[in-house]
Length: 164
Image (tube, rainbow, N blue to C red; front, side, top):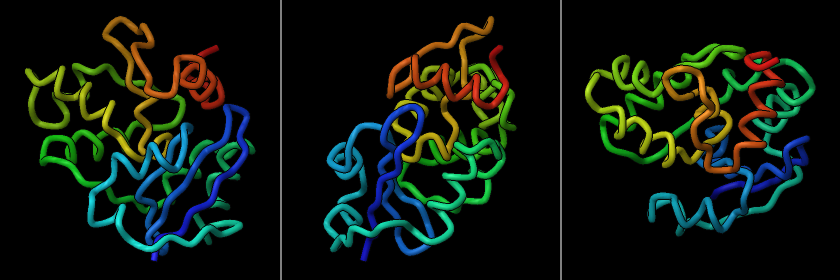
């Protein structure tokens, strides 16, 4: 059974979907948005709405309360091709307060020429901001895109100290 909960944040409501203690969906739009993008195997499972998800809800609250490294303690799982999985793994290694260019992301994920594919993997990330696609920027430092809006990306980067 999947667990769902939402939490109020300074950037809006964050919707969470977990398979026990593993986060499989997180985002600032809606549960429907997350379920539509999930694997059919997961999206067709029974769902239980809960007040909070053990460990996960606490770590997310800690992050928004100022412990910018707290999200690293959350286990995640999402469907995706091998290169997307590599991109998401690299993203999780970007320290809070730091950013990485799409070009560097592609290179570290094993395909230096796959900059667009790295951007696509960012856009398909189903577990934001825990898999921190907000820390990926254009070469030269411009913020680039963010599926939940540039104001949310900018807030998250300021919160983590990557922007002044």
